[in-house]
Image (cartoon, rainbow, N blue to C red; front, side, top):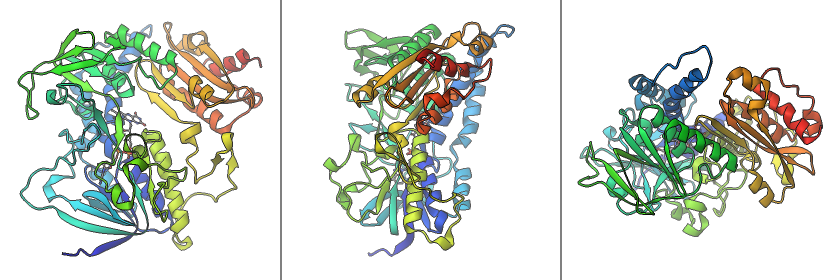
Amino acid sequence: MSLSEELFDVVVIGGGAVGENAADRASRTGLSVAVVESELVGGECSYWACMPSKVLLRAGAVRALARDTPGLRDPGAPDVAAVFARRDEITSNWDDAGQVSWVEGAGLTLVRGHGRLAGERLVEVTVPPVAAVGSGSGADGSDGVAEGGADSGLGEADTGEEPVTRLLRARHAVIVATGSVPVLPNTPGLAEAAPWSSREATAADAVPESLVVIGGGVVGVEMANAYTDLGAQVTLLARGGLLSNAEPFAGEMVEEALRKLGVDVRTGTEAASVERPGTTLEDSAPGPVTVTLADGEKITAAEILVATGRVPRTADLGVERVGLSESALGRGGALVVDDSLQVTGVPGGWLYACGDVTGRAPTTHHGKYQARIVGDVVAARYGTEAGDRSPTRGDPEPAVGQEGKPWSRYAATADETARVQVVFTQPQVSWVGPTEHEARSAGIPVETVSYDLSWVSGASVETPGYTGRAQVLVDTQRRVLVGATFVGPDAGEMLHAATIAVVGEVPLDRLWHAVPAYPTVSEVWLRFLESYGL
Ligand SMILES: Cc1cc2nc3c(=O)[nH]c(=O)nc-3n(C[C@H](O)[C@H](O)[C@H](O)COP(=O)(O)OP(=O)(O)OC[C@H]3O[C@@H](n4cnc5c(N)ncnc54)[C@H](O)[C@@H]3O)c2cc1C
């Protein structure tokens, strides 16, 4: 049977935070836009990542602050039920009705189902039987964990009805924003042990007595911190050191703090095999799990969480049907894009991508930045002036920044030169731009200026035991900052001043006139400049 096509100006595949933003932005010059979503509108960030994970960390962080503040009493261990209740509230109980009404209010058309590229400007959507997806279907662990990179699909309920296929024709462009899936290493016995991924860790409704976390990246350290706060005995296994993408001192400070909190941190090791006798994937209450380390040591725990990274979600996207072979894809199967977010290697220039699926800078903030850019590119390229409801104020000539990259509304320059990351452990870690090692490898002549944050007056007012450190990277040729790292309480809130200095390429002699208020921790900015010789 030949299907009739539904016509839109733009089709967005993936209705996570990034897809929603790209769709909204693209529609601002009067274009009609469809958003295809296979699970919950709002994506990973809203229901199983940023939001719930930060709520799980919040009570412990406030407790630590109270404990360290003279005049306050230790409020004691967090009330776990209340923490989970707040988590349920912030995830809207895994019900996307609120986000659906936002999408509809923005004039976008939501199409529920799994989208695949079916040809030039053509998207085929498999619409599951009504009960299979949508509001309330979230916390079931159906997250398509990639074992060796394969996407296991939707986790649809079997209603006995046949799925329906719809064909969406894009007059102008298709934007892919399908996100990423966690990687499950091929460690013997690991898959059979039915480990937690970040989804189960953020959606759990009980705290296991003990937990082994595999992976020392952002998700691993945050969840190790959160579950220790909530009362679990946590062992953290990391192949190298912790937070290997950050400056080494940041990972070391987090490691020390986690140990102090009671986490058994094992660096330079990995799980050689995993055993969970008698477990089947369907077990609702599996027994204890035993992890054998590379040196033969065995660690037994009630639960195991795998946090060893994520890969772009392109496995069941039909990329081969638009001429993209495996070799045309980037690391982990990423859609390779240029700075205007156009997918390279697809003739006709109609395919775009943004967010985790590009592998460029897998965070919500960079994904949404890319979404604004790709949305503006599409709106400007194909929109009509008559339909313009854009609040933006024109397009000045783009300035050209470091390494000749344009700072324009139509180029995702910051992904490369000013990438931003925050880790919400205690202490927090935040950084912008390259690490010292990355800068030197890129041939940037940098000098580091480091400062112990406990030496500034604002820190001693905050708490007598304040521990923190900050470092900036100065491009000695151009006398501007190219990067900065902060470690300390609320270090995430200190970052944006540095981001503005890096993106604005503010000369140090001008920064001298940005007077930090006394007594704030931001006085470290003055100390940086004095230490550099101003
Ligand atoms: C535990 C954890 C904590 C995190 N914390 C933070 C944080 O604090 N701050 C931060 O910035 N980042 C954080 N991240 C990263 C952040 O979650 C991602 O960068 C972000 O969700 C990426 O957004 P996205 O829209 O690209 O992808 P997603 O959020 O994954 O959305 C993609 C959407 O596309 C849908 N989809 C996929 N394939 C198809 C298809 N074929 N057809 C139709 N729909 C499809 C999916 O169902 C999903 O809704 C965290 C990640 C994890 C795992």
